[in-house]
Image (tube, rainbow, N blue to C red; front, top):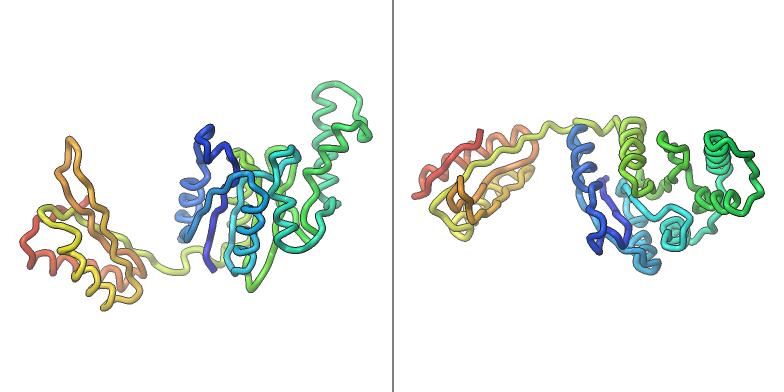
Length: 267
């Protein structure tokens, strides 16, 4: 199973709002010994969202989706998820209850009578219309739930609001209650050095040789043109299963010392 992230909203692609979910999801997963395998950003286009979900539903991935689950004309995620699954969209009874509770709270706070039959209140119930068979995701911020779809062999999609103050606690709860058995299952090692006076093309054979010798390890290179504090260089390193990656790093340093390059260790 791989963890994936879908971020939905025209406002992200237009630059009207800056995405904050990507870095937070990486942080939440890393703290639990997990990693994000892929991420996609989509606009508010029904055909594209539906096609993307059809593809991701066919996987066994664990996917967080943020945005587009409201009840305004530019919110399409709930309908697209139902279309991708080929099921109707229905009012979830638990979601209905939570939304009604929230509306009653808002009425009390405003000191006005609560009337469920008012058009605006009936419209708010649309936020609880999810694909048939979905489970709700509790929202500790304002009770308006998200929804979850379980599929494949352990795969799942978790659909949450685009607001970080709502989505992030929901993500943490999902990870800690549903996937604690995956936490820190594999010891991880990542280490790198700065290499000066070299080009990536000259280091590529070494990188390929290390990956061939240590199959549980990835070798990475991050070229930099330098700045006021550091000359032009390449950050060269390894990451992966702890035992193999540590051995691979030792091999990397040994081989770099045989080359005519300057190596600076990173503290």
